[in-house]
Length: 208
Image: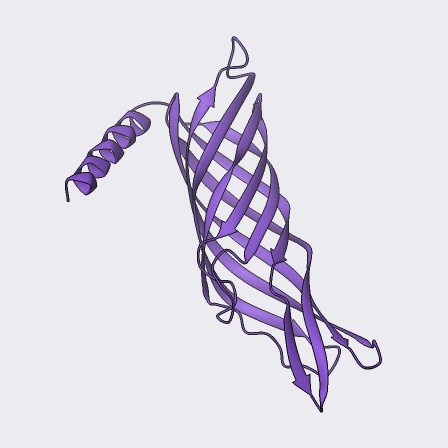
């Protein structure tokens, strides 16, 4: 209980410091690559079929509000398209079957971090290092089945990711590089941490 109280007090102190200082609105778009680490085998018609996954390029766009001077909090809302290929091999004759899945996601990331001074004028050139959580809600999942050998994989409707990365601010523009690791499984049949996502965002910011 005491540790929880300390965390709450620390959060309130950081939040107060952030909300009382600089604020800006950020609009961005970018690309991502989803990776699923799940190799499985299934017996179909007496033949073992091995299944793996290959990440495909996706994209995202959204808007965020950043609060804070040296420390900052940055909640956002974004749309994400994640794409992956399901590759199934017939071990008897080495035939390869490839299906594709696209996940349409509404995401609410919350980032916290620190601004690192790398220029005398941070409005011209600045660096941010962040970590946080990304809550993802799958609103539509589309399976493009090119084979009738395997059933389409089942994906979770809610995914929670740990999020870390850095942002480079240049005048009113910025570029962001991030990495996410699954805290909840992207597929109900696999374990936590069996998925990750690399992403890059490009955008502009407006001080308010």
